[in-house]
Length: 234
Image (tube, rainbow, N blue to C red; front, side, top):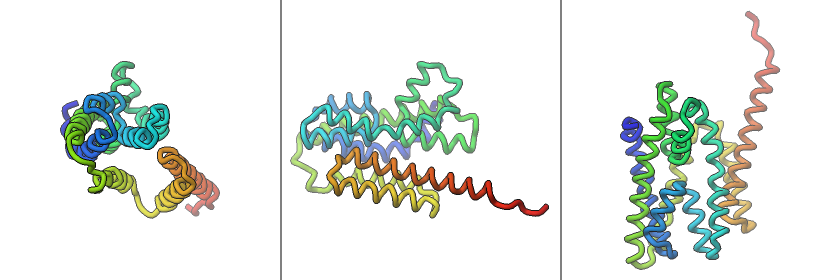
């Protein structure tokens, strides 16, 4: 666990930066610091928390905020599926803890380290996850505490911290020109949905679904070409 907790520190610092921004903006739409901290520990899903707070600020509907957060967090189903081998021999309670503390940062680090060292297991995932939880929660509470006592900071562009964080995550997933079509398709679909005034979280989810479909179609097409290609003479 300690190895995971130490290796995740650079990524954890990055998460803490936009965690602070999230805390500031959450406080300025009415969330108390203790509520922000409780949300960060209990939900621990940065993008979903941002979507939920944004939805709540827009219309004050708690149900809408919950649905928006859940919709955006559906991507975690794919993340959990990719961890099946890592968690296969893990006891149930430990597995539930690992699932709760898994975020984009420690998932990416765990998969990267496991590719180099197959012995990397659930302990690494949990250790790195607990560190990110601590850094994320601390930064959001600090942001909420400061944000509650200062003028509205949205005019200073602090909300762009979220956009910058997501751009950085997308850049980390970029593997080359083969990803251009899925990325472009996802971006275009999201833009169209936003243009037709679909709620932000659902527009993102729709764009992601289009990207996944395009990527899957490309894989099937590549597999089909490989299966029908003539064999080379020996």
